Amino acid sequence: MKKLIMWNLVTVDGYFEGEKPWDLEFHNLVWGKELEDFSVEQLKTASSLVFGERTYKGMADYWIKATDEGEVTGFMNSLPKIVCSTTLQSTDWNNTTIARDAVAELAKLKQEGSGNLFVFGSGELSDSLMKANLFDEYRLCVVPVFLGKGNRLFKEGLSYQKLKLLNFHSLQTGGVILTYAPAQS
Image 1 (tube, rainbow, N blue to C red):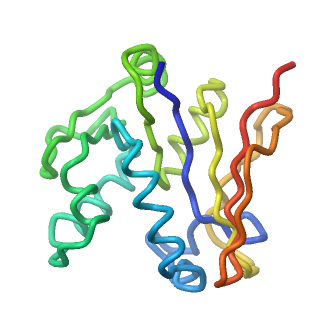
Image 2 (image 1 turned 90 degrees about the horizontal axis):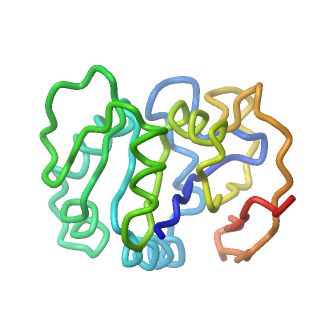
């Protein structure tokens, strides 16, 4: 069975994006060799990357044009990708399929084979998947900054859900990677 995993960088006050789309400057506060190595290790376990439409468009625009030959670029461009959208008609990024009903299609995909399905960014999609209790893990890199305003990762209206800490790792940059799973009731 595949695991559905959220991976996000989030500020101490809960934002995963600034006030404007793709306002991610705060990521630079924790980016470095440790976080890059962690990213590569995660990508090695991925069977697919999952995005909401807005995140997909931004990621595709960046990674299609990426010129470095690093491991992250190679993985991002070669791994299968799923974009969850009810309106997108076509995709430009290789190895991408469109899921029209994210909750139903990802629930089914989790039952097929093994590997990890990583949801990157994608706040609205993540909110839907959380409300459907589909995430098996939450991996968050907490960035040591108060942003004060922007796009919150965890929206209002979530149900109470207890989590179990699986792992934590402090980065030399001051960030902390936390891995949680839903606790068994």
